[in-house]
Image (cartoon, rainbow, N blue to C red; front, side, top):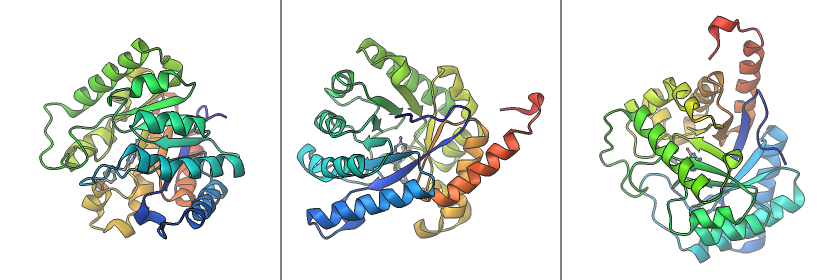
Length: 276
Ligand code: PT1
């Protein structure tokens, strides 16, 4: 199934399956609720559903591979069985990568860019796509004091090195996607510099994915708490899409889809000397 829309920006809808996201702890209700949420996002225009069982937001604590598999595998199976949409797994652990692809995921979305031991090999043994994301530090502490000499250069060089590591492990370029990792070991100024200059990542010659939805960078600019960042998040997705980003990872699919429709309509009328 195609995960990219040539000449357009695809929408990746976020489906968190952490205990705090759906709750009840019991299997059947959780799975049904997750499929219902995925179905709604597809109806609203999601092109990919990203399923994650480990929170990687700032301050989050690690989960075991068994716990993560128990959370995501049944949901991946159910979504793949019941919906006609490509499924992505948001994970860094080789055991979860293997089980998730076996369950039907066709994209491995790894905020640790396959740096965990065995992760490169786990992806190499599949035909799945992989999204390599930049992060400075680890989720628990990454926001304590992020520092860069030149954030664009450091992000680009890190991603370039991880692309090479993939190729050296037998994961072909045609399976790779890169992501600057908004909010992952970055202050507001770093996030804004990245968003304002996403074109700098194009030299890598690979599809670009970005995730800014509901993040603190949106809150820092708008002054709004996490529950009230939809409009700011859509604006950020539109700014990325105008720069030709291939995939936006979002919670609020319907509003983002409208934003991207405006982008497409305007882009069709852009003059050559004004193109991103
Ligand atoms: C992302 C991403 C992700 N973000 C990819 N996967 C998260 N490829 C999870 C905050 O500052 O950007 N790209 N998977 C969610 N992580 C965060 C990070 C959530 C920061 C919130 C913040 O509020």
